[in-house]
Image (cartoon, rainbow, N blue to C red):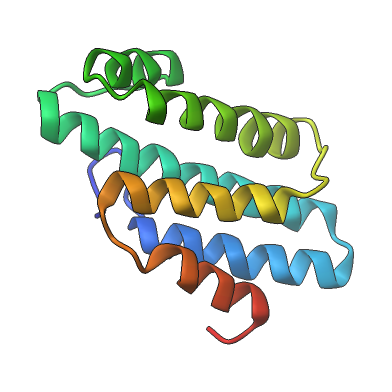
Length: 134
């Protein structure tokens, strides 16, 4: 699901994030862990934006627009989850360097992507990559 504004497919972003997290955690490299969080956040925004576009034809650029569009679509449940991942993965970890339990949060982001896209493979692929199987 690569798009004009998101040239990396969702699956590639999630897999790249998992691999980078695994390497960063093993090397105690905080920069890699933070970059991993950014890749996972990118996958969430891409899946969310594609869903919004598919349902409404609207293109969103900012997270506030994303959340508003989800609310207008009657998907306040997803809006709350996107907002939480935005704060914990993108804000706290990527921007502020506070990455405690970010692996758990990134896995939750994968579940969110699954719920948005209907593709049930993302979370298991992510887990597999964290283990080093992928």
